[in-house]
Length: 397
Image (cartoon, one colour):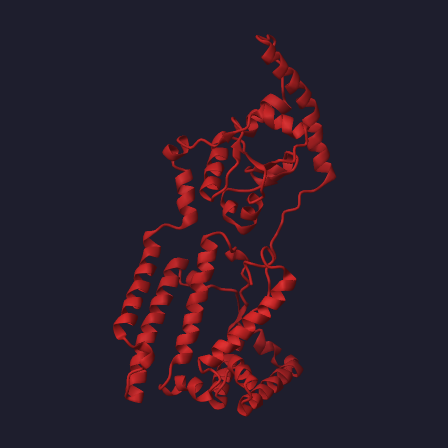
């Protein structure tokens, strides 16, 4: 259920939702005719390619959905678990499953579907599956060498081929459309009649053209993250951007007052942050602002988000990106943390005071320069900052 679990749907409710999705999936399989062995093996004999179309469509839909969720920061693609590839066991297992598919007329998933509606041949097939699992488990010491041979890790095809993820997605979608057209022609030749599911032809041809045009647009339009970062790096756009301002004195006062209504986001390096960090601050990078965890943190309501960095330009750049991502109540500190350090933490009063306001400011800064370093040190000793890490959820089909 990711990316909805555990942020929108709790782990307990997740099991209930999974059952409902499983029931819906089984119902759709049955309605699509996947409980009929004749329809399933039609793939191997050329008279029915429904299996290829359904699974190709499912794969392409899942691929586009994952890429889209990653594009909008709702899913961290780096946390998606990829089953490790053991090439020789994959080849042998594929051959065994393919042979079983042709002989038995079912694959593991469709056999459960057919057995659920009372088909005896499917029940026998399921029973054979259990026997096969049992034989493999008991004989594992004999098969272990083959099972673990040819460990390729967790490769991704677009990386192996040296192309971008978007290009691979486009090519795979184009391949799917091409495969649908070719297999439809094969069906027509074998059965001697047109497939009524693809009539009228003009409608499906138009949909195919639209799908290709949408795919091409992925190369015309820039990646959202790259586009926003490039805009933030544009001096003209950045100079016309005016985020909220929180002076060093106001920030110091809020720290002394232990104000819980501010959220300090520190955009320095992890090493700099570890050396000195303001109370209740968190460390982020410009790139990490697009991750799911960062977005959830920035969604905290009723807080003033204070972006700090060594310099004001980095603060402004981060604030610009935050605004483009839809967040408000963003403030920066003029002069950055360098100014805060020079004028608050390492405050040195001037020899001459020109006004009462200046005298009051100096008095406050002198007090803050004594207390805030102690608060920072106590905070460092009291707790070690723990970086929240979203764990991968293992599993799969």
